[in-house]
Length: 202
Length: 152
Image 1 (cartoon, rainbow over the protein chains, first blue to last red):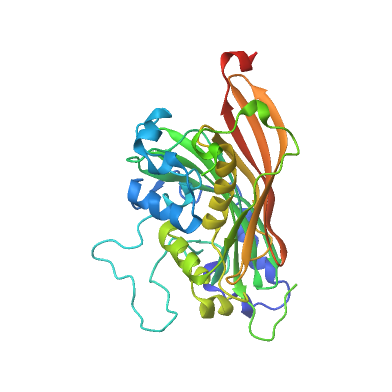
Image 2 (cartoon, each protein chain N blue to C red):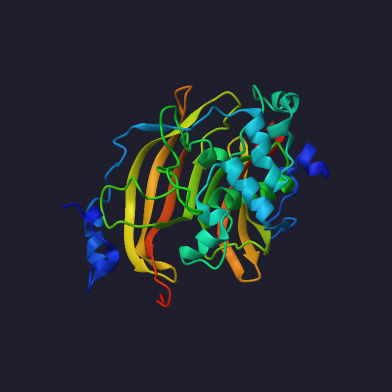
């Protein structure tokens, strides 16, 4: 029976022991060096939509001529787009994505949770906690980027105000389909089992 | 539009202690839904109040990409298009940035130095709501091109 089949809330006593297999896996590349490519190449329309909710006005991202004057072949992706443009496609032809009409039903699969974690307790709550990024160069419209590797750097079980779970840090290289590494990203996450109503965390 | 956005802030005018113009972003449902749609973080905690409450939060709250890109907007508004971002460090989410709040993004220059052909500026950045500091403080490291004279 894998640790994943267990429910964190069913364990009495030291609930953190369920996270020991994850702690033991610190240093492991859970992607085995494979590349997870973003769903689409960087393109001007998606850049515009990225800028809109930020009211972010920079001609490098909107004006190809201005971008060329600055030495780039086309408009550039906002640097922080390394997250958005490395998220894989949500759906592929032939797949079923939605299988329930419950109001808050979640898609059958999504890259934005902890569902593909093969070790540790099953968790239903998940959010990002911290990020560090080194940018080696700008990404230009037309490039497709992805994340190579998914190395676990740390795992710290902790009960918080929202539930019981663990803080984890993951590292990946950001690579371009032009063949080079354009950045390095370390993402901290908190995966947890939410408190039941009436329960109080720290 | 300020000069900095089209011309760029001169590196030799930047001093430690300089405060960047604050960016204020009202966090409406509309904005957060636009953000989720554009940055592809469709985790329901960022656009569905009922779902967010079921995960222990008080309300839906802004997603990571949106928050980090607010740091990019802050430094880009100030530095202009000739600067490049070398790194972001210490981007730590301390508490949720809930819908219905106005989030302020604030920055201060904490280091200015020359490294070869590039001027390097470190800006300490944080987000605040009525709950206090919600993200950071962390550092955005910027690179500015230097002409031969500036390179010494």
